[in-house]
Image: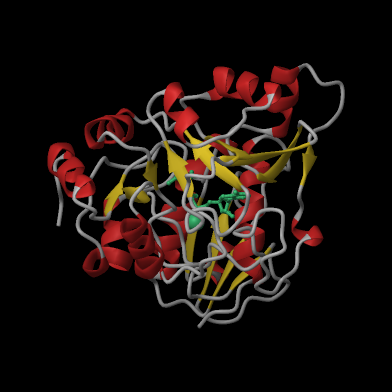
Length: 323
Ligand code: TXA
Ligand code: MG
């Protein structure tokens, strides 16, 4: 199941689908120009076709094969934050498959920072479509064993690149009349985008409340459904006034008193560091989820910088109904 980068590139060239590490989360990759491979990605994840995929490139000039036009602000952001955890939503070339874009006229593209990911793209010789390597609406994988558990038997292999450094998915940015809008918060924050573009105003964010909680293809970024990133154990935000039996706590910073009432406690960051919390988020959720708890309670982070991205994932996980 585990492949070298050379073998992975070979499999990808032949139309296979392989999980690869990136600095954010593991992605399930396939040749973006091979409709069959793209269809297999949707099938393996049981992802609905209206939820478009991100295409990964290793060099800036590959963008020409995907995007019809690159707004000035997008160029500035790419110059500053690529390679890195930033996805740009751009008008697509007509030659790009509608399957990848869920029928939208735009395509999401990112150049990952992790060297292994870029090496695989270069060796495969084509841009790689790669959503996060998890089943639809389940927890994202931040190490190779997370991928193996959820998708091992459904895909052609996994490249083990160790733990993902950032730990939450890339920031997704679209452009409405040239003005950037953050569809999904990530490590490249609204503040960083505003600073890069020299904008004297706050970057607009699509918030959870502005979205519908049902499956709906009319969202500005269709994958950003409220229900997302969920463990199979029910998750609740904040500390409960009363704790019933067999509950877990995902803490942040200084631990609250009365911890003995929890059957299992994990701390995202004892020193209250949002970067550390993001890197630990999915690993700790996977671990709590495997403890057969009745409920998980999660403390929110201060809503600044990466704290916004972590809170966004926790809020979506809390909205989710377990199967
Ligand atoms: O960090 C990441 O972005 C990871 C790694 C593997 O690169 N990938 C990832 O992909 O998170 P995925 O498929 O799980 O999330 C892609 C998000 C979805 O919410 C989708 O709706 C949005 O990007 N998206 C993709 N194409 C879009 C488009 N044309 N317009 C608006 N949103 C788009
Ligand atoms: Mg995903």
